[in-house]
Amino acid sequence: MYKKYLFYTLCISLLIAGCKKEGNVGPLAGKDNAAFTSYENSFLEGFWKLNPDWATGVGYHKYDSLLLVPNDEHRQKLVNFAKLQIDSMARFEVNSFSDENRIDYRIMQNQMEYLQWQITQLKAYQWNPNYYNVTETFATILNEHYAPLAKRLKNFYEKMAGIPAYYKEAERQIKNPVPELTNLAVDEISGSLDIFEKNFADSLKKTTIAEPERKAMMDRAHATVETLKQFTEWLKALKSDHPRSFRLGKELYEDKFKYEIQSDLPAQKVFNAAMDRKRQLHKNMLKLSKQLWPKYFGKAVMPNDSLELIAKVIDTLSVKHTTPAEFQHTIEQLIPKLTAFVKTKDLLTLDPTRPLVIRKEPAYMAGVADASMSSPGPYDKEGNSYFNVGSLNGWSANKAESYLREYNQYILQILCIHEAIPGHYAQLVYANKAPSLIKSIFGNGAMVEGWAVYSEEMMLDNGYENDTPEMRLMWYKWHLRSVCNTILDYGVHVQNMTKEDAIKLLTHEAFQQKAEAESKWVRVTVSSVQLDSYYTGYKEIHDLREAYKEKAGEKYTLKTFNEKFLSYGNAPVKLIREAMIGKN
Ligand code: ZN
Ligand code: ZN
Image (cartoon, rainbow, N blue to C red; front, side, top):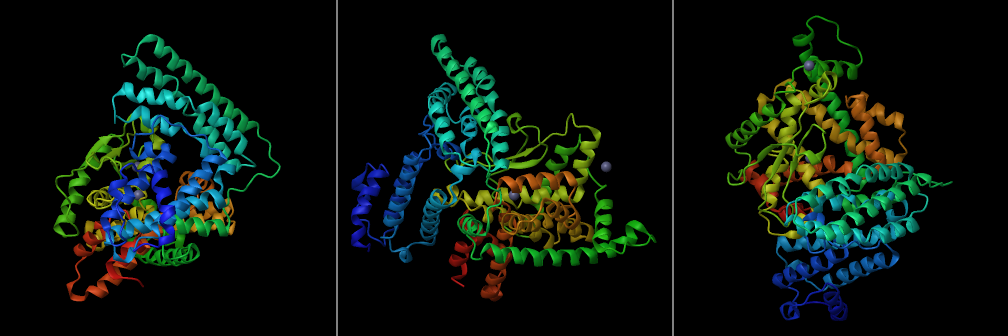
């Protein structure tokens, strides 16, 4: 059941999408889920052709050698593509779809509207010089072992051919850029030059590519470095009387929030909820701190100021931490502990056939000590999940001490819950069982981060570490980070929050170290909306669970909710909500 007037548009869209198997597309009856699946494939094929760097990033390597010139003509093609897809999709009778396809459909629709909005409204290509940082794609081609080295190096070489035209166009497009983003581009590009000279040369030596060809490849690499250097010099010399502010402003912010977070709520409402949450957390923290005071401070007088009192107790608890030498080992021991707890409390099923591999952080991830997940991409669902643990080797005693106080005995456990079990890693295993590529590729960050935050609280609510006042207080501190990320992002981009107020919020009200607060400030000046994902997703999942519980009545179990929720893959929470309990 599709609208007739769209038929012409549809034919064009399939041609553009490069679908060669016209016979398989068939009459595209609206009710036909299979027809939609086939449409999805042609949609993606067309999408990757126009976004080769993105394709490389998600593990689709057909267009690795392409570097498209970022000119008006290319953007017009993208806008046309989006319009054709929106028109083509309108012919489907979406209400007859399976939940799976209906969610895909809404994600694709949102993605196409977002694409149009980015080009016609946001226009980051004019004011964000870091938009033109292509070094990451080159690094991916060099570092990821998806194909034989010689083949990857040839693609690398061919892609470099596009560099001069690419940066010539970049210089034409950039007007009154945001100074913070200009600095970021200069730093990132300058810091990546090794990829083209040293790393590329080293890799070439490992192949049997013959000398004359090798020389041509190295010549082009040198020329690429020259172009990149010229571009950064050009950026540094750029004089602008009216540089654009890094603050997005209310209108663009609300729109970006709508497309990226895909919440039922507008950004303003989420901000208000975060403010309430902060007040509630402070209240709870004060109560716990007063309770803990005698245990740690005996008869000493409590500070009058409640935030000061909380800070003192947190400081004292932070002294309990592992050592630099034991850091990785401590994390390794935590994983089976978390797994056992999830099993004992029957929170959700953890698939024993998809174990988590804990490894030392690979060299190319730089020396930032941390614990993070590396997940297989959408096109490599069978790949391993790695829990990367950074090393504190070579750190000064002071630096290591400060880091370990931050990731103390309590917080390190919460970090492992968040990153691994039952946080990101467990969620990913479920997501990979959902067959949809669309949900993996256009995965919703608020759902993914929200689940990780939700899972921290769930563990404590179910008695993890006996939910001691110490553990709970430290979780509140950790959770304040997510809540204040939202307050900060909205405050800075919409309400003109000053740097001074921002640092005060993070250090005084969220108990963060000065260095952490400073780097968060830098992050909020070069990004927007992403920092909202943690708290927004958490809130939506939490609210959904309560609504689901009420609806399920006596049949409710936490495990059923968790597994049902995760079975939809990386979809926006509002769409999962519709599938689970219907519209509000
Ligand atoms: Zn210490
Ligand atoms: Zn996370």
